[in-house]
Amino acid sequence: MTARAGLAFAVAVALAAAPARGALLQPGGGPTVEVRVSKRGFEPSRITVRKGETTRLVVSSSDAEHCFAIDALRVEKRVVPGRPTRVDLTPAQAGSFPFYCCLESGRAAERGELVVTD
View 1: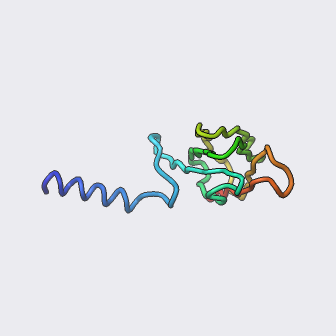
View 2: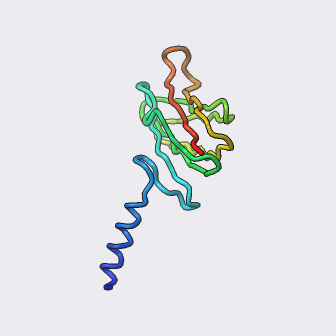
């Protein structure tokens, strides 16, 4: 096999094993998920991770200062426009955990859901 064919094969295998849309592999091996927050809400608004696996969320905003909070996991981070905020999570239990912008209240608050699978 030529070096070029070997590289093409390696790229094809890596793409086939890649995590779901929006998730990348971080250097430590766990996935990285890019999350955008704006006055319209979180994108994606539903994030699925695995119990016991470290996942890095990179939360960014381009319109205003926001917050990313998950009460059940004791997470609360400010998100400043133009400066992505990293949140490393290693959930210890499976379940569904709401996340939200803690700078808004009531119906105006941006909301989403973190789903932790076994």
